[in-house]
Image (cartoon, rainbow over all chains, first blue to last red; front, side, top):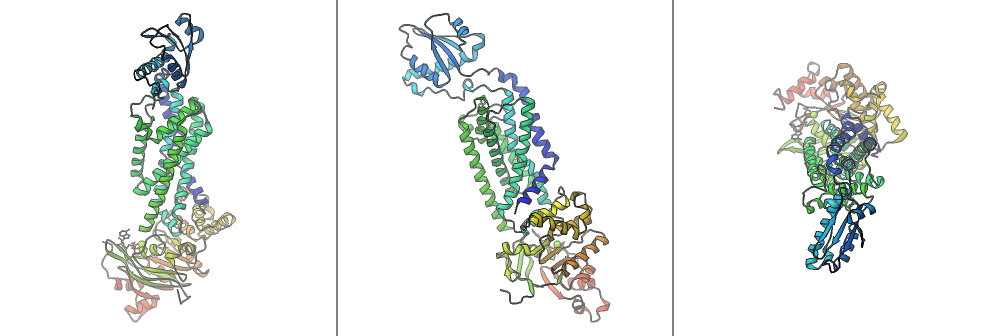
Length: 353
Length: 254
Ligand SMILES: Nc1ncnc2c1ncn2[C@@H]1O[C@H](COP(=O)(O)OP(=O)(O)OP(=O)(O)O)[C@@H](O)[C@H]1O
Ligand SMILES: [Mg+2]
């Protein structure tokens, strides 16, 4: 009957003013500061959405054979090609709201753009370069525009980005919420009473895990609602995003409780946990955005925070994300592994006491 | 397993070593149903370690513990609810109210709902804290914390109550109150093991006393019997003098 134990552990945690401060105020304040600091920088990348490019091919152009492949590659990367046999490129751009216009000449191609469509023309330039490189080998199937490149990232403004990323980051620092409870249990040797009552290892784990997850997700839940209202953060798919964040809080809680179970020192556990979370956040886009970071792709792919950040940001901007599945998979994996390790370490400790 | 139904707890060759030193050394004690058993001993004698082994907090290196006729270590699940343990330290949550502390620890024994609410009221009334049930434990005085410490261990109506120095650092009124309560529990049917340094306390409430030193029981009996070990005329000696004679006057725990 651990219901009452969970209830009282919950009371102990939410009665700590430090927790309220940390979980409700900090994410709002930090994301507000970062949103302000990065808004100018991130705006310059706005507008790189799907767009249409006008084109025209001269007779006997060296590109004649490739145009079909270029149009096809464009389609797959959100660029629609529309052919215009006549008309001034600059005027066509204005008239048809094109992102750019390209003329395939006999040996060269020319890209036209306007002041407002620099991002789109840059994107087109990038794509055509890739196509021309591919044409040397004659294998266009290898032309893949990775969404990691800045041009193809759906536009996200700093409000949404940092508004989301800091909720995630604080969710990963779950252990702080338990500091009071766990230290008190040790200091006053309350765990001895639990042993006398013969509380099992899984019961003891759940009696700490459940309230900790509840307090942390409750705290950042309030922070996201309040922060969302004040700053206007968009989450896209709220239910799915909430589920991913909850899962990451559970994974982080399991991981950090395991570290505490090993060290039995709150200070050491917090230092180790926050070190790990800082590194994961550093690689995963918690400080500089993952779109523009220089970390190698394979390293990012190993980082659960990267998958989570990316899934949530893309849900916000596009409404869907290929990273939802991998984020859920990775986080559930961590939750399972660390929960089992907790139980294993707990049982070994019991046997050796 | 146990041929004698009068024995509620028996240790057989119970041993615990720390750093190769036997802190509890092949201890054999039998606690009879219905008695208040006093365990006396200087600091570091091994009293708490013995209690901790009985209570599942410390694992013995050797020996068995029979509780209610069964091997306690093999039947914890079934037998734990018959044992109540009041630790030497204050094992309570300061940021929980008095009643919440009692709720938390009483619920560990599977008591819930209305029955739990009843037991909380009863336990708090028992230690005289009904009026203060809604106060946070951290605001309590030392004596009140001691009483709450007791209330947290009795709600499940254990058959054997183990008190490890429950009267440390409190005023004579509170001490008296606690001693009276221990006698009351005993009258209501609970067997009690009581450890203390205070000879008068032990002499006043215990029906049988064991003196422990260096992990071993060096004398056991009623206070009269213990005094007789030292002098013939028991009027002329206090239990404290018996204790000092048997355990020596050298300082312990050094
Ligand atoms: N976890 C431990 N590791 C090493 N030594 C220990 C440990 N626990 C107890 N001891 C040692 O075992 C001895 C007995 O300790 P114990 O607490 O059982 O004594 P005690 O009779 O309860 O003393 P006191 O009257 O001071 O409470 C002491 O010398 C103590 O230092
Ligand atoms: Mg002791």
